[in-house]
Length: 211
Image 1 (tube, helix red, strand yellow):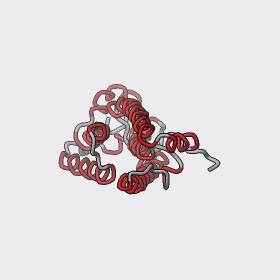
Image 2: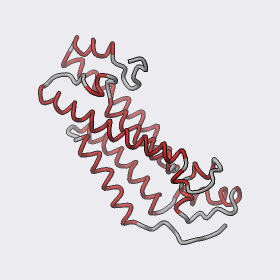
Image 3: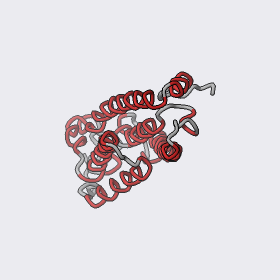
Image 4: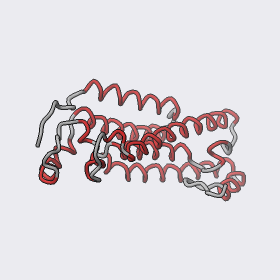
């Protein structure tokens, strides 16, 4: 196993990157209720766990080091590129930043943040008018904000998988699903038949392809 200069122990980068993504998401999500804060807190924990392993301490690399060293004897486990485990496991050559998975991750991240900002704009104005949000992304799916968070999480998992974030991901999916169901019960109580008609024609998470 070859050792170049370690790409870890860069705790300033952990703090800066975590703060950027958390504050950016916060600026659109605007948590107000305890439920909102739990949702945003779980997302923030995922982001922090991700960047801690990306720039701070590579826990996943450490735990898998024996297996990786046996299977990939020439792999420099202390280099930043080695953290892109999908590229290693798929046998990709060259800089992983230009691999298909990494490019796909940028697409998911970009669209996720775009969807989050678009959904928040519609929801904000609907809340100001005390009406049901049914335009923009809400015309295609009932919970675009939660879908946006999932796309962002997937984007990060595509480029930098870790054992902790892979374990957290299904938990977050379950959390967002339960929150969506809870919100729908509240909307049902508030808007009655108007919400029923909206729910009958608008999918919860996955839009109709023919629309």
